[in-house]
Image (cartoon, rainbow, N blue to C red):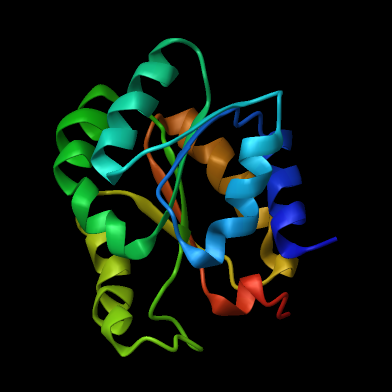
Length: 166
């Protein structure tokens, strides 16, 4: 089973059932899986903050929402995280490829790669790195905590995760 398949099983076990995404090469297999699953709601969006508005509405309608994106897009979400998710206690799950992490071939990605963890901390998004499939229990624990506390959670999946590294 690929890392994506293992991650997807964990997400569905936690009843995540409403997804939006912004494209990322590392997330292509996950996005493909979302497009094919008739048991969830999925839609692509053009901007991360647009996705958060949709996901907030989905949560209010009883869904368990997640945003699939690369970490460079987290900067686009800051205002919506503070004035929407945090203020109204909406537990969105951020499934984030960590561009700029070890193995990154594009030098320009490194700056936001270094900034994403402090940015998440600054806006009170619990940031959890999942470097390998052996660490996927962190996903289940983080999602459970997000819905218990009604706060967003951000998972960072570096290159080592997608390569199946242990």
